[in-house]
Image (tube, rainbow, N blue to C red; front, side, top):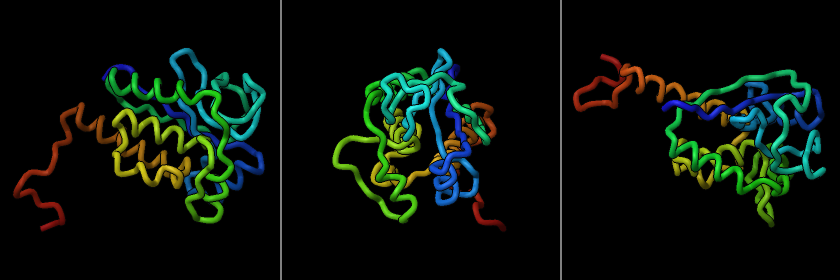
Length: 182
């Protein structure tokens, strides 16, 4: 696992960002995008900041396309096959529209689907991680409920487990292991 997948979690001072942070969790993130090998961010946004097409949606934007107030990068160890599937999945979605229904769903606490293929930032990244086999398939029916904060927590858990496995410090439970104390 040499080249990792890098996800960047951010927030800014916009009203949309503040609403997502308020309804999306306690970590304070309102957006997540994947950082490409050539220094761009590939992700879905509801604005046209540095957008190539002038439309909101799935775009490649320069890494420093906006002024963020909260930034965290999560480096996820991955295999060459996982990276290939992850990036091919994201690349195929470039140009697709932004899903405002998902944000409305965060606010209302409901899963609201779009009529046409559309993405919000965290659903897009979670879907690509799921396609690559990095997140479990059981999440497939719940993708539209994943906020940037939720994705951060899940991706952090994957990162930690993979780092433990690579260091030899982690092993699966074995028959006879004490899991709940003495």
